[in-house]
Image (cartoon, rainbow, N blue to C red):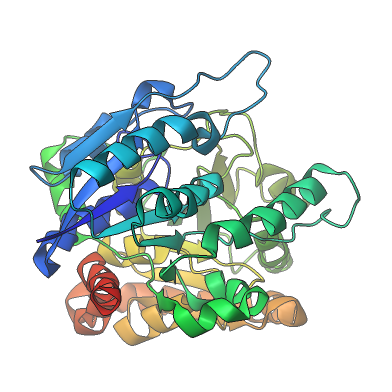
Length: 423
């Protein structure tokens, strides 16, 4: 087998969403002729709550190298694990590359600063490297135009560092093409010599099957037979609030139609570990929906706990963003949870085709900020259709053959083909 070194500073038992990208690649790469080695930071240096159940999902025999990192200081000056563990990861990666025949170095980001390790290790050892964009690095947030603001400084730093990191990369991948499209536009010379591949977040059926052996029970809410209860699980992106508000307006304007609806938002808080850092609650209160149709549990809960809660209620609610490149990974979780999905997504999101081709749910697709009114006007219609869809939903009729292209195994196959093209 060829060897691939994956530098992923967060890895199970970290409960951050990005760890599953590396975890699932490591699970399936051997089938395609690549032996993975994962280089990560030891979990005692993580700030987030740990989920040791995630370690039970790791493939048997996976080689994991753990390094130290600088601790978080008080006051908290540097939190990013990619910075705190940068030199330790560099030192260990260089040792591994020199001692063994490493055919490829692969770095999923964020943490964005870790991408610089690819360029640095390539310069010192000649190793071929690639970067996987789980999120875009150069990203203009609201407020980025305010000079010397936090977002302005972050944007300027990313614009300076990204070209350095990618200059010698042989492979650029992303959750969707839009995640690295800006990289190509800003670095046209890279397009001529670099391999590019779009690989969505893949779903892993074994994760759902393994739940039965872990004894996890839902604890945030209980099933109410008199209600139509949906779960939204995951963080809220900044550009998801406009569609959210249009949905809340539609619910508020049609109280009789939505009187049985409950949407439970899980892990949507401003701070991952703060149970009082509400994001959804102020909008729900604004439209008189709080604790009636809308409920929020701000604190992030472990990945496997999320899957249990998806399984606990009637269906899954998925909300996209006004940005076309955003492809929520929760789509794949929802399909594999075997629950009917009600989604509001940008029409350019690859998740739209996932749901339509599989028949796993209904999608209200809109064209970004230009069609926000469409959400408010059509959401009641889609909800009526969803109630009918729910009554007749039979998971055995879901077209999983179409969904296979979005499985973690197939996503890893795409990565392996790209690696083979380079080597």
